[in-house]
Image (cartoon, rainbow, N blue to C red; front, side, top):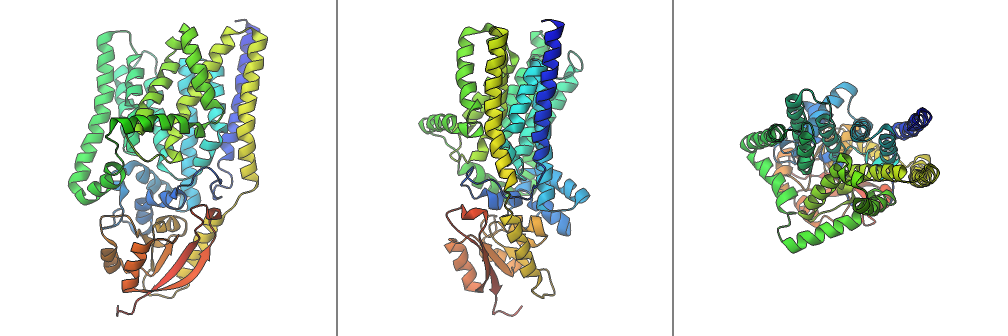
Length: 494
């Protein structure tokens, strides 16, 4: 390649990275805005930001991380909550602060993927990958929510990037460090275990000697598994009830053991994964499959093998669970971008210069324009229904004169607490039943999306529910239900 061509590629790489940086920065703007409509029908928009930060919220309010009888996911998944607790201590607690930390982890995710791509390809391909990820509407939307998937995924990429770093030096330190980082990812969200085969593969590439390959893979893999196992043994010993309850709700009730059903799940996941990148995903799969048959260079590329190993392991994991909300497909966006970038680079090298430039330009412009239009349309017309509702709930409750802090109960009360600082307990989740919670915590208000007959029946045995107000939130996307706040009036002497 001539010096002139090298210079042109460097300038193009810089230009692509500048556009990527624009989308990276944009995700921090108006971060309190509602999640975009039409991506998910799951109720997680109401619940998950509070559920998986509730220990950090409690610690910020009164110094406790564990609340007896309530939902305590920190026992099984501590890392995300510890990170949030540290962020709240420095910057204060609010929905905006929690979401900003998630957006920051997304930036680390994209930079880590850029590093990974540049290590096993060239700077231009890495810039393509960074642009695809940063402009992705799907990733953009979810990176503005304080959910564990973004933190977990960034730690997975950090582990893989570390395993690919430092050239031929510090092999044992790199293997140990990358294994430890992957363990942190697993303790953020257990699905990160899918990345263990990819980590072992990258560690094996650090040396050409078979015995050293085995030692490095063993060092990284055993450290990861050992740390996770040791933590789980301690957690199950000190908090057996919470530990068992979480596993029952999130693993045992969703685990698929029938091979036929698991195979159906995998094929369904391959089909539905198009949600992560409607254009790039099918092109990456089809183009990658064709190039695997005609290009030895493509087949031998560590970046391609890493992407295929990642996709295979994650689809296999999806086959084992019965629940596939859209956010579960987030981890597929990284190998999709890597595979697409590697395919584009291979085509660029195989074609003559002008057709290669034209094809590359058409594909990138189409994908970035498609996603960019959706991102900008969303950012130009933000809604703030959830944060507005939460603040009105806080005003209603704080206007109620009481000698002690009033507790809000509800399935998504923790998310209200994250924004407002109200004390909260979960009405539906936790090892303690609702009667026990009502007796021990005596909540003063109940917030709901309605259609909770068991909860309402239990509340009505102890309280009179007085409707305070109702709100249209997220366009009432979840089965058309409004958010309703009730005051709980007890006739019993306190």
